Length: 253
Image (cartoon, rainbow, N blue to C red; front, side):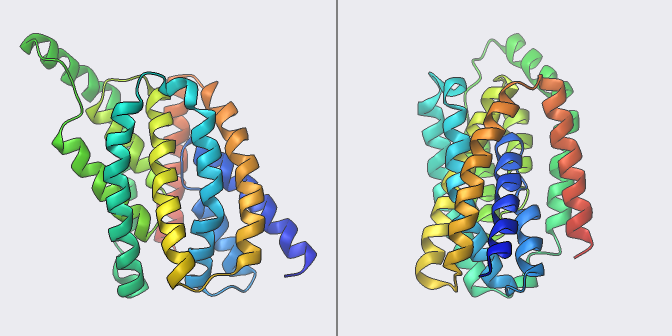
C-alpha cells in the first residue's frame, strides 16, 4: 500500500466512523473507496468489517452516559445481535454475493419510512399502553427483529444502523439518544463478530484493516460527541437523509 492510499483510507475511516456513531451506513463510504483503490469486492467487504469494528466500539463508548441503568436490556439485545451476526457471516461466505443485494435497497427504504412515521406510531403505542395499564418492556418481537438485523449486518453491514434505529424507535419508548447508544452497542457487536470470523476464514488486506481502524476509532469518538448534542428532531432528520442516500447508492450498484 502506498502512502497516499493509506491517507485516503484513514480519511475514509474517520468519515465512516463518524457517520456510524451518529446514524450508521459508514460502510457506504469506505466500501466504494476500497474498490476504487483496486481491492476485490470480497476483500474490501471483509477488510472493511474488521477495520470499522474499532470505530463502532469507540462510538459505543462515547454513548456510555446515555446507557446508564439500561445495560441489562442492552445486553439482551446484544445476545440477539451476536447470534444474528454469526448467521450473517455464514451466509456471506456460502452464498453468491448478489443473492441478497437486490433486496437491500428495499429493506433500507422500509427502515427510512419507519423512522419517519416513528413519532406518531410511538405516541399511539404509548396511549394504548397507558389505557391498558401495562408496562412497556422489550418483547419477543423486538428481539426477533434485532436478530434479523444482526443477520443482515453480518452479511451486508451497510445501513444496519438505520434499520436498528427504526425498529428500536417503533418498539421502545426510550429517548432517541438512548436508542442511538443502544444502536451503537449492537452495531459494535455485529462488526466485531463478523470481523473475528472473517479474520480466520476470508481474504483480508491487513494494511487496509490497520489504517481503517485508526481512522474509524477517531471518527467513532468524534461522531459520539456530535450525535449526543443533536436534538431528537435533527437526529431523526439526519437518519432519514443518510438512509435515503443509502437507498440511492445501493440501487445504483
